[in-house]
Each structure stands twice: as structure tokens, then as C-alpha cells.
Image 1 (cartoon, rainbow, N blue to C red):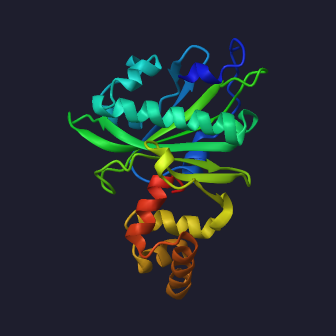
Image 2: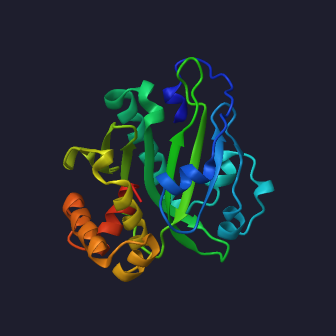
Length: 251
């Protein structure tokens, strides 16, 4: 499937110096998570963070290729992953443009097998970090966040979050696209940095007083931010806000 984007034979790429913690804290969802790097040159896995063993009960040293990651996905959800990637690739090729691939974050959900032996809902987010001179995928940062405390049923939707001012494509139904509305395009900077902080704290279960204490701002200021956030997001309440933020990948 990923070979559909290859223009010519892939060349290996070097991973730039990256502050993973900064990328994760600013760009990805709250909740128990881990990250790793996938190299599309040989489909190898590297730089797995410590949260992996806690999530799956397996030593990261045993994870060598993308197939080792796919083995944890619920068998019934493999088709969801395949379809989500197909839709994303089609959107990149025919609407966004492959040259902009590093300006987009991919987000969708599926069930993963956990260390306790059951399957729980996770949010998958990925960001292409490098491309070779031909424009092929190089290395990608993938983050898996446990969202089972926020949702139990997969919405089977895909979002491509635009970075650096690029438009976002949100809540794309990965099945039956012909029957659903066209993807919504919104500016990624609809929320201020402070508003994003508050959204993440809301998702973490903090109330207005706790948010005010943690951010050293007044309760009235927090209330004002919350009102503005709901207005910008089009959500009726905090529950809707968190659910939409998780499904679209902007918290």
C-alpha cells in the first residue's frame, strides 16, 4: 500500500536532531502513550519510547519491523488501518500534493492488544519527518495514545491536521466516502497556545479551579477561555470538545 507513493526506488534518509518530548507535548494527544520511528526504506522500527512495554507488556528490544507493531492490532481492525492509510494516501496524492507531506499529521483510531491481554482503543498519529531526494517517504514519527478512557467505539474516521498554516481535513469517513460530506477544511491555528493548554487540561479531567491554579490565571479568565474554545470548536460542552479533539487529533 505504501509503495503507491513511491516515485522511484527509495533511498535511505538520515534522522535530523529532534526533541521528541517537545514534539509529543505540543502536537499530540494527552493520555498514556508511546512513540517510535518507522523507516520506510526497510520498514524497520527504532527509537521506541519507554511507554511501549507498559502498554503491551513486551520488551521494545523485540520490536524490529512494522509487522511486529501490526501484530498487536485487533484482527478486525486491520482493515480499518488499511483503509485509513489508503484514504490518506489518496488525499495526499490527488488533493494536498506529495510535496507537502511533511506539513501534515495523520490521525485515526484502532484497537491494540494491551499488557493485560485485552484490546483497548488507541489513537494513532503520525508525522513524516524525512523524505528522500525523489520525494519518497523516509522516516515517520508514530505515536499511539490510549484513549479507552475517552471512547470505547471506533468512529472509523480519519483526520489530516495541517501544520504551518496548511488547511486541515477533519473527520473523513474512511468507508462510504461517496455518501458523506466533503472533508472540513479549517485553519490549524484556530486555537491559541493558551487555549490548547486549557483543552488538554480539560481532557485530563481538570476542572476550572484546577486549571486556574495550574496555569496561575484567574478563574474568570479560564471561564472566558472555555467559552471561546467551545465557540471556536462548535462543541456544546467539554465532553463533546474532548471527543472531537481526540477524533481529529488536535489534543
